Length: 407
Length: 91
Image (cartoon, rainbow over all chains, first blue to last red):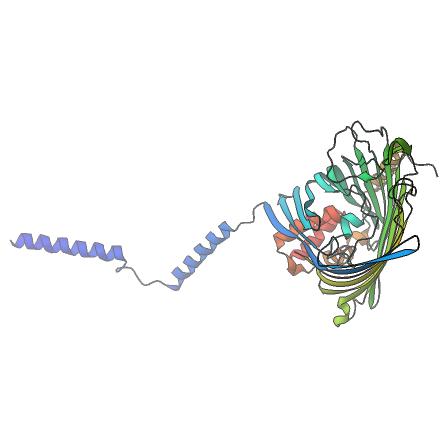
């Protein structure tokens, strides 16, 4: 009996000790060192989960919204008519364009920018860039073609100092499918850049206008476009650019075989501090030529008509900002732009147009701006009156209030 | 004025690019003054060609790497310029 009791005592004691060890009752109290070790282990785990990796993604882009009120007076044969309008959304006052950027390693960059505006939902660009070597980038996909500086660099609402775009600069094929090579290279104290590409190109409409957006490429012809920029000052304050574009424009089976469009552009950008001001001058001049062709008279399909299909457009802009002041005035910037667009006389769409725009911008921060602009556009129709009705002389007077932000 | 044809245009472009490439590669030089420029100086000089100078606090270091590549394709920065500007903005 005593033996059984002893064995039972030993068994119970063993069981109790096991329980104490299991439950930690027998452990020593945690020390500061233990706590530190636990913290280090947790941080190591956290660091492992957040390691940098090679691929990165971000969303940026822009949003522009505003209001425009307009009064247009049209005079035909001495009789004037007046139209008034006011609207919150149009091409110049509303746009929402988130831009997605993917960086794969150090060599690849993917860009995609859908855009919602007055014309609906569209895509500004969707392309892949391969950074081959210093001074050489190859890009393919759907992109803004290299021609001038306005469309590629200055059109965004949070960059443009005025609420509207200059007239006539939006060439028929501002974005297209294709490939381009580009790069920036040093040249002593100067530097230069090149951007040359091959694209699907444009099509000639039955009235001689060119169409670039939303077309199906149904021929073997391709359009070449390129720009070379020179920055002659070591501080990059001055840039000159020259651009050229050439390509056949006939649609498959069209009546305009071998018709070609040739375009040229000359641009400049200059920024100079004249303390306490910062002065910026930008300009671009476009020339567009399409080979002479015979077009079918829309009123009588047995008759043809022709004209010199030559267009020009240009803008010059100056802006002044007291950027070197130490008070709120440094956030204001005034800008003035004069633009001109001349489309072919004696065509069905010819007109001479001038645009004067003046405005003040208040920079809420470096990428957020509130703008008030006043714009006057004078248009004088030069159409062939045997083909289409004369649209007279018009004067358009608009006020814009616009807010724009980079997302 | 005689209208330039396709051959003229491509010839002019190719010639210009050839001459400038030759000068860049054969000369293979960046002047000491340009080479010595800091990231902050290049940031101030190049960004404001088109827009206001961005605040370094706007994006994270990883995001500045992406923005740097994007801006190189827009403004045709040289590789050294991009590298120095991004290094400055990441600080």
